Each structure stands twice: as structure tokens, then as C-alpha cells.
Amino acid sequence: MSLEWDESEAFTQGTDEIVAHFQELAGQEGKVAARHGDAAAALEEPATLVEAEYVFPYLAHAAMEPMNCLVELGDDRCDIWNGEQWQTMDRQAVAELLGIAPENVSLTQLYAGGSFGRRANPQSDFVLEAVSIAKAAREDGIEAPVKMVWMREDDTRGGYYRPLNVHRGRLALDEQGKLVAWHQHLVGQSIMTGTPMESVMVKDGVDATSVEGAANLAYGVPNLQVELTTPSDIGVPVQWWRSVGHTHTAFSTECLIDEAAVAAEQDRWPIAWHC
Image (tube, rainbow, N blue to C red; front, side, top):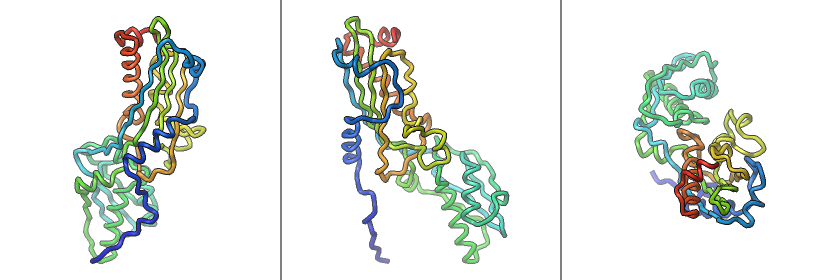
């Protein structure tokens, strides 16, 4: 079989291009996710200025057990055995695919060999794939359960990833080495946009999960501003990854404290303690 792929509408940017694009956006104004005091004014003439940028790559969930699903179809009925995180949504998606009532879709919950959020996929991707295979087999006269198991390569290449993020931070310290201003701009795709939780989790263009851990910074800095830019032109599929926004904000916020300590030539705990 000779195949010719049409990539005219494909997203063809690689990591380097995406990072460069995000870095450019990090230098522009974003949507304000959190603000108190006047960080911009406090950063104009600081005794010590700290600037840092952090780049976080796309991450696959890489669960010990690759995605898999067992499906048995009957007359106006579907039985599924799966390690589920998304029961209600998967059930509805399967019912819509098969054209049957949701109450005729039975899910048997199995233990999963890891997941970290991957099995709660907004598109019910691997579940619908298994059901589609079972449907095609039944239409071809095969009356038997169908078990689909992704290869590890499929699981990694066909994932929905923790978003790539670029964080740019600017901190100001006074003459006593006290942290007086914090400005942080985060750039990354939204994991909630396009999901059933969008109306709750995305407000005024700010996905709360993109900035959690930064917008609600654990340190009491008197002047703080956290901004978010959410590019919508990136064709890489993303979703939540265990601990969600904290997978990148915990690193950047704690490292910024460390950077401030180095700049002030002191241990980090006095800076954190006095916030």
C-alpha cells in the first residue's frame, strides 16, 4: 500500500519554534490573573532586581500501564471494562457514538496501572477508539469482546500532554534584602478550554489551573502581579497532569525565591520567612 499524507493543515512547528513564540509572548502584556499593591512601581528602582526565565517541556503521563480498554457490544448495549477516571463523560461519549441511551452503557471499574490524569481525557480518546474497533468488528460479523491495548510508542506519541510553559519572573528586594515586589508572566496552553469545566475554570480568559501556585502565591509579597498568556494557535493536544498547574508553578516560584537569595547573598529562609 502506497500512502500520500496531506499535511497542508497539519501543525508542523517543533519545540524550538514553540518556545521562541512563547518567549516573545512573555515579553508582552498578558491577562492579569492576580494583582495587589503596585508591582510595576516597586520594580522601577529596586535595591536588587532579580530576573529569571524557566521553560517547561511537554510531558507525557507515561503511566506504567499503557492505555487499554475492553469492549463487548450487544443489541442496543455496550459493556466496558476499563481503569476509569472519567466515568460519566466516557459513558455519554460512547452512547453518542453508538446511538444508544447512556443507561445502556455499562462501565466496570478496574484498577489502573497508573494514570496521573491521562484516563480522564476530555475527548474520551482511547475509550472511543476501542468502541469504534468493536463496532467495526461487529458490523463485520465478529461477535466477540474486543480488547485494545496501546503499544508504549502509541501511548507516548498519541498522548495529551502537560502543556509546555514559559515563565518569566522579575523580583525586587529592598536595602534590607526583603522581597517587596513580584511580577511573573506565564505563557502556556489552557487545559480547560474546550472541556466541560471551561465555564467554571476559565474566567476573563484566565485558566485558573494555568496559574495556580503563582496567582495564589504562598509568600506574602506586598506588591504582586501575575499575568497569563494563553496561545490558541498551537496544535499540540494537552490536558491535566497530576498536580496540574503546580507541576510548573511550584518549580518557578521556589526557584525565584532561591534566585532572590543568591542575589541578596543570603540564605533563602530569611527571604521566605519575612514574606
